Length: 267
Figure (cartoon, rainbow, N blue to C red):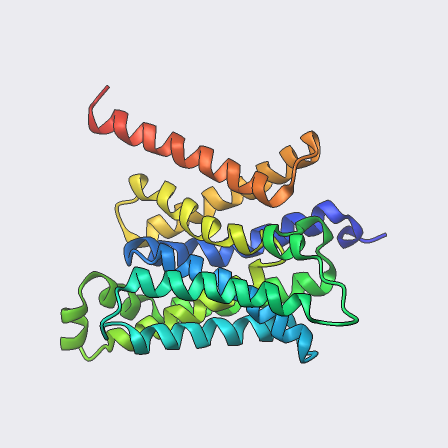
């Protein structure tokens, strides 16, 4: 019996793989105020799942395709008379609804929608681990390669343009990374909780970070603690694992906010 035969080990490795990619990317989501975009991309992934099952292709490919199409559509329609939050809201809920309806019409395929909506980290297998860690590695490599350009275009788009950096291109690169994270995280925390794992660790890390790089590292630590503690608590209290991980992250965010308030007021 190998170590990976233990479902708790596989679950822990899967959660850590997602956090490794989601936490640094979540920092850009916080800095760019893209929380709604992350949520919309996650919702759209259900339509990707339905299309993948209908055309008998990989779930990863289906989710990535739909997420990228949505990102390109938002980029094309943004600034043409549509408020961005309105546009994202329409696309998020429409794609989720079309995805749920499409799944109901697929014959001969049994789909556990609860697993896709809320995650099923305890059912992660070896192939899933390869997909998760492979996707996380690609996202990390992309962020490392484009870190300076992404950071400059995030903090000062005008300065980025003057330096020969295209803010629109960096936005598309960020959208690609976000689509990859959603695709690999759907098995772990599900569609409805992916945005939370992108946003909460990064938001909790913000009060303790003086540099962008430090914020990304602290976010990874907070996300890892959330995964490890959440899995243990879910196993102990027989609660759903994905939501429990997010609950732990939310508690850590509240603790960080209280500590920041006390420090700011010197209490």
